Length: 99
Image: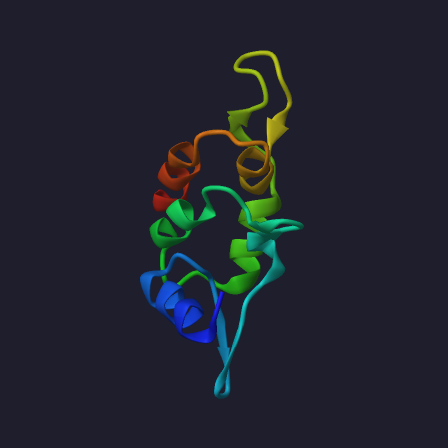
């Protein structure tokens, strides 16, 4: 992805970035070994813009009782785990909107 596309996605909030001087820092939380975490581009725009980066990191990595591996019988997954295994990103997006 070239620089202009990265800036465009940052503007759309389809990528999460932290401005440091004249540069953007893109936290690793949104990336997997093969690229973007699947569906994260649908979740990021729903996060409140005023959330602290540490709060965002914790939220993405904390198991959530609304994200069960197998409904009613599985372990609770964190939002990033939920997305990484290919579950519906709209479920996580709704949770993000409620923060």
